[in-house]
Image 1 (tube, one colour):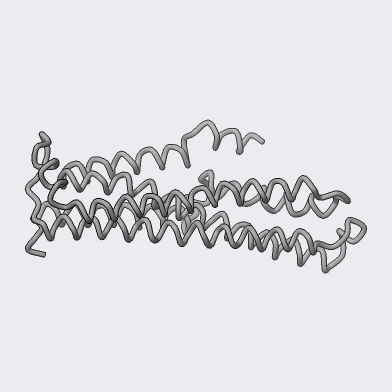
Image 2 (cartoon, rainbow, N blue to C red):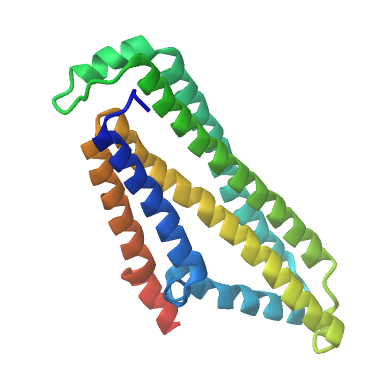
Amino acid sequence: MLHFSTLDLIALVWFLAAWLGYSYVIEFTAHGKSGLNGLMHRYRLQWMERMLAREARMMDGQVIASLQNGTAFFASSSLLALGGAATLFRSTDDMLSIVASLPLGATVTHVGWEMKVMGLMVIFIYTFFKFAWAYRLYNYVAILVGAAPPAAEKNSAEAQRFVRGATEVITDAGRHFNRGQRALFFALGYLGWFVGPVPLIAMTAGILVVMWRRQFASSSRQAVLDA
């Protein structure tokens, strides 16, 4: 790690700790389950229960198609971002001269820059796999809805097993979509490292504040609680 200063390493550890720590709190703690993402789970369950009561389920198919389209957009955007990162990798010399001319631009070695770009590429690869898997899971949900028991059997044991299974699949799709979107947000913070370690620390902190506020202190969360 001779290509990075001590402050660089501290900033990188802070970035990883913020990402992993926030993810853990959101997904595995009681406090995280009270966030906006966690509150949406009950609505997925209600959706599957009420879908069973409908004879015509075209609306449910349209909702699933909308979820698929949004996920496909982010998956394709991740590939475009990965292509942009590859361009940064090929243009190392030009980018080093640009960064050095910035007011906060830190001195970066050729290898150090390429390692930073490779880290960014790993993040975008991760986001693509998350969005692609979420898209596939929404495909599975569409198949499940097509195979749902008829409305006349909505109170049967089979129908209740279907509700639990379908809810779990669509919740898993939402979980992977959220992970991909979270990675994109933190990728914005990671961009600060190309300028220097201090911008990385500051931008990561800013991303944390924005994401926390949207999950726990936004008007959207309050509206869901009041619904």
